[in-house]
Image (cartoon, rainbow over all chains, first blue to last red; front, side, top):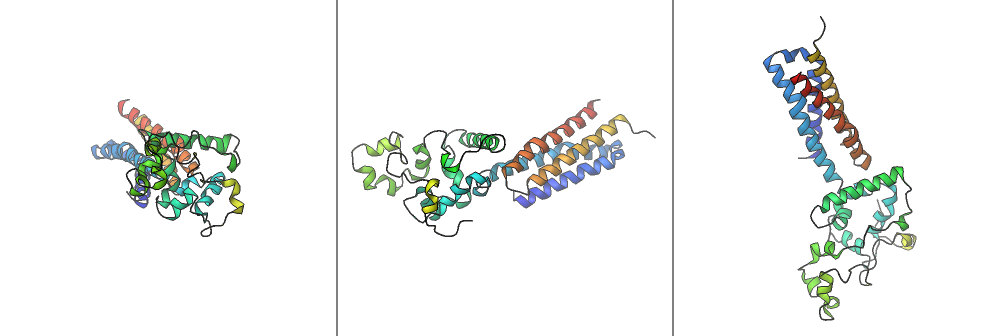
Amino acid sequence: MPASAILLFCLGAALIALFVGFRVHFTRSREGKMLAFVALFALPVMAAWTGFSEHMDRAESTKFCLSCHVMGDFGKTLYIDDPSFIPAAHFQNNRIPRDHACYTCHTDYAMFGSVRAKIRGMHHLQVQYFGTVPKPEDIKLYQPFNNRECLHCHLGARTFEQASAHTKTPGQLDTIKSNKLSCVSSGCHEFVHNVASLKDDTFWKETP
Amino acid sequence: METPVVERRIRWASFLIGAGLLIQLGSLLVVHPLAFVAFLMLGCPLMAAGIVLYLLSLVS
């Protein structure tokens, strides 16, 4: 459902609920009782559910992730003018949807991965407002980046399966696929966000 | 004439639900983590309290 429709739905539900409150004597009649049930139970539940699902969708957007100040530098790294920087190369070449850039790589492609990502987000929020916010260069992943997240898209792709760097030793592809040889921390695709060196970088275009 | 207890409860329920839905509506106007928190921590509890009050008014 489009966001504008959800907004209208919430507004309509609120107005109907308030109408019942201001004209409470209507509920003495049978029709009034039915209206009250719709206005004070069915519509609010539906409105809350659609609102919740909209918030869940928004929580996966790049804009949402970068709305915290500390994430700003990570957003800038998506615009670095250097194809060896993995996030920048993916973002600039539409290998990932730009409006879901952070979530696409940083969710877990496993059962309840999306839920775990949201729980991590709540933890970030707690640190942002009630904890000590680290410097951007001190922010680390909770656990090493799992190849599973890369393979979600790259597995089966010719550029991945037949790349000379991936097949130069026997069994290398299997060690990558089994996460024994990390894509990003084994010296192959090691340039990721690198926010510490941001001031020395040039950019593809002006960062938003 | 004094308003019956049931109607007073329904009135309170409608105001709580209306307030909760308006907070939820406001939270949907901005894309920010705090908007989500406002939705979850303010809008939903107010609305839930209103629904419970309304349901209580039905069985009382």
